Length: 190
Ligand code: ADP
Image (cartoon, rainbow, N blue to C red; front, side, top):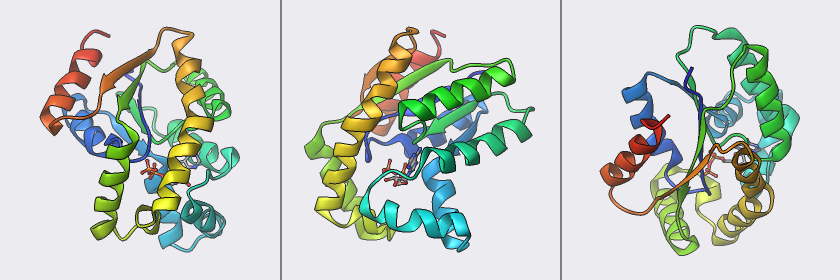
């Protein structure tokens, strides 16, 4: 299997690039942000728990997100591989993911960081907020909190995979095609 983590701060372009990657490599995309938003839309118990935390730009508990990923990885053994988008966001989540994949005899092939500076992130998110309807994209202080949470809690995930020589960083500013080419050149070396 080819199991990728598409990594980066909010607004780095993970979701957009993931779409192109799944088309080219036939992977299954797992976005915890999208899964949580569907739970909110369906007004499930889990969605109700996550709603306020997401609106503040903080992280939903590791148990909740790991539980969602687990149910898919265990029930979809036919997949050619997964692309994890917005997950793992803490070292605990990374360790849980490593164990889940080990249970099916697999592991992470590569983490790819889309590197984008803070000013560009803020501009992109505010712009996305104009039509995405996402409240967390419409308020500068929430956006700044999400970037801070990324630096404090999520950057260590990259260090976790760097220990196994599995972290790559690419420039995340440029045209969509240029960035996609950079991602392909990392994947094709695997
Ligand atoms: P973005 O990358 O733009 O922040 P996401 O859709 O990945 O967008 O995440 C939106 C929100 O969902 C996060 O700010 C967080 O509250 C919650 N969330 C998503 N994935 C996770 C995760 N793996 N762990 C904890 N919270 C998460």
